[in-house]
Image (tube, rainbow, N blue to C red; front, side, top):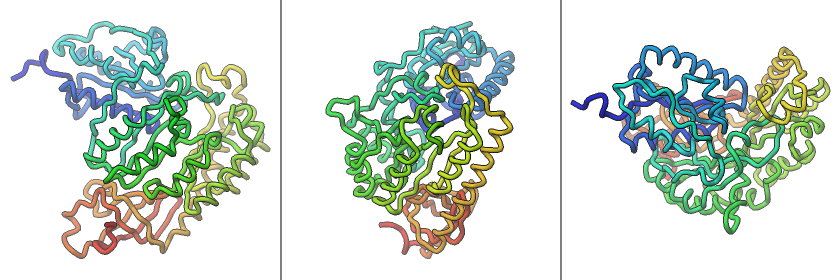
Length: 463
């Protein structure tokens, strides 16, 4: 039997935040598995806990700090437990981070999981050393470690980062200071990554970037996102391609043409507007006017009539008046987005809005405005989705609705989550696994957030 001091640590990874964080956690998990580590089933059997954090909203930081408080108490009873922290809460100055979070043994860049080596190779039958190397976190292009492509699960939908960092200057956003300057992955590396994912079961990929439509501007030859979509569309076995998040400033005709002409590219675009008032947009550092944004959405919909569009908005930004908020509601009513992700403004450390503007909208007003946006979008989303009742929608089956359920779940090409039953005329439904299949679902019911339907097989299975 292997002694505790010689075995590799059992690990848990806790992830909060965006899809980019989820992809980064997969990279970290791949590295640990290649070192011979194994996942722990519960905290009680873990030797290493990694927190992949988000700092976009204060609520996300509070969630992480709550986890850290629990870990601090647990570490008092389990001296062998090591805690590592990565993600957007980790600043370049790790000395300051160590003072703030003394229960954390190592801070590291999520793109450099090799930093965990010192925690992986330590003796597990001894207490964790007082501190590890507090090397400042580097975020430049040289920080990118070699790609770790191993698939972490057999899910049919995978996230693939294609550009890291951000060069925009939105006044409310902490991401550029935490994720660094923009740097794109080479086309060949991304193609190889997706080919490997497909070989292990992936049928759909979502290309990720803080500003994904900026992809390739920093590479030799300046390949753009449209070119990358063309290359990925050639991969046999890959059925669907999505991308997010797009910036209105960088949507061009080549990208719209690629969405229209490439069958594997889905008719869905996430296009944050952030607000519906020009003065607020200027304070936010968003370089467009409301009329420009509306023109762009109208143009996209004219070229892609079936395209669904989702967006992000912030309520209660510095100086937002009742009239300016009413302009936001009017925009949402005119554009009629399929999905609206709404957040109340919270000041982020060292951002221009935190330094130069007063956070002068009361918290109760922020909450009331957020609820009004949610109520409006609930109505709009339901009305849009109800137009799909009676139609057949192509669904990529992601798996059972939940463990043990007889129903299945998946998404339309326009990214609407769908729950459905399957009537298979050829065999036992309960024993069949339809995960990864493309099926046509007859929509029988719709809400603002999901569709309900049924499929009959094999006649409706996509060949």
